[in-house]
Amino acid sequence: MTDEKNRRGEGRRISERNADHVRAAIRDELAKDESIDAAHAPDAGTPVDAAPVIELQNVFLAFDTPILEDVSFVANKGETICIVGESGTGKSTTLKLILRLLIPEKGRVCIAGKDITPLSFVEALGVRQKMGMVFQGAALFDSMSVFENVAYPLREHTDLDEGEIEQRVREKLQFVDLDPDRVMEQLPSELSGGMRKRVGIARGMANNPEIMLYDEPTSGLDPLTTGTITRLIMKLQHELNVTSMVVSHDIRSVFRMATRVAVLHDRRIEFFGTPEEMAASDDTYLRDFLGGN
Amino acid sequence: MKLRKVQDYFSLAGRALAFIFARPFYMQDLIQQMDEIGVKSLGIVLLTGFFTGMVLALQSSVSLARFGATMYIGSLVSASMIRELGPVLAGLMVAGRVGSGIAAQLGSMRVTEQIDALNTLGTDPIKKLVTPRVLAALIMLPVLTVINDFVGILGGNVISTVMVGIPSGLYWRTVWDQIGTDGFALRVIPTDFIQGITKPFVFGGIIAITGCYFGLNTTGGTEGVGQSTTRTVVMSSILILVVDYFLSQILLSVFAP
Image (cartoon, rainbow over all chains, first blue to last red; front, side):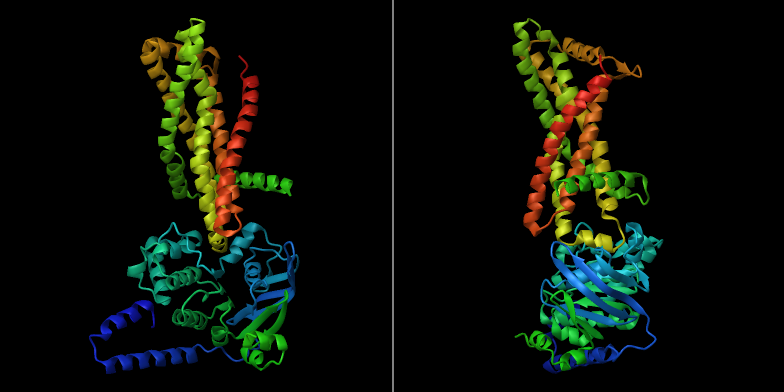
């Protein structure tokens, strides 16, 4: 895998090996990338019998000014929905609605067919256990080590003993291409931005959630790390068949991982469909958005 | 709008207190907070208590000398320390040291989305963050106050012995007489002590809840964290002084001599 450690390891060894080896290694990496992309490519169209996992029905939300108006969309099991749009159009707010950190003024938010808007605070905590959220700044608890961060949801909601917790934490850290022995005892402040994001993903998926939500998972990262994180989201979706919802600014990664794209504009859903439909659309706003005009 | 905030403040207090008796208990957080709020405040409490006792003895020796009553320094110092200065000074010092710390920590957690993360991971942030802090303050502030009272009286002892020339034995006898004069509740607990312990208990709650309230309601990034910290110190100091008056009024009427 193309994790940072390996890459750095490769770098150190370059001087020792001859150039052919290096070229071969790079070719291998690229081939691996392509094969992963091919293997994890989103299925074209959604299966007919797929059950809706996340459903927003005519949602209205306002604080002082209206934020969302008449927003509806459905995410079926195993889908990756990307929400794109200009800054401040309520993309992150939509994720908060799904997490029931916010309650819509009108409309329904259904998770696995169940309306979560009338739930009490305590019931909502239960619903959230099925979801994993990756925050924009990773939002790791800075008073806890990486191990404690990833173990947190396990300690809160499961009866696993210490050995099982450690095993699960190692497994999740390996899944996000981090070396457990190296990072487990580190504090979040000692990690790089990309590593923090990956620990955030590991924490989000620690409890084996059915739904993963990502708030700008690639913002503020270099193109290589952006690629790594994008691949990770696709791997997660593919291997564990979770339903994902990704808020992103990065059109390239959106096109790589989305089964469907929701474009928010002017408090409404301007477009909801597959990336191909989006690329083929002759809607002026969409063309402007994609072209960056 | 203002009324809404008062309501939020009390609902936060109510929920934080209700969670004291609800599972799961975050014992580790509680112990950590007791260390943070209690043990680490010991230094400033010892220092302020000692100097307050000394200055009380010094000032009262001047006034009492006019009536030829300097031998009563002990009773004056102990009454002032136990009833008023001990609780209020400990409260104000802890509000400055701990209240600001709580607001800054919870405020940073709010602006870096860690509070949202707790919520998302299925933990009630009030239970995890507010309750341990409130409980720790409720336990530790009375303890700090008793220590503050004692060093204050000790400071008074040093000054009255060294500068005024009152023998230590006499000083402590007047202290003890003073504690006994206002009678005893349940025959053994001096009513002065009840006053002196009730107040810090309330002040502890005020400090922790005010810090948590402003911390959790922080908006506007790092600048907001600074504002929350300032507001916490100002608000809890004012509340301590105002509540102290009304509490004294109530306690005096309950334990009327």
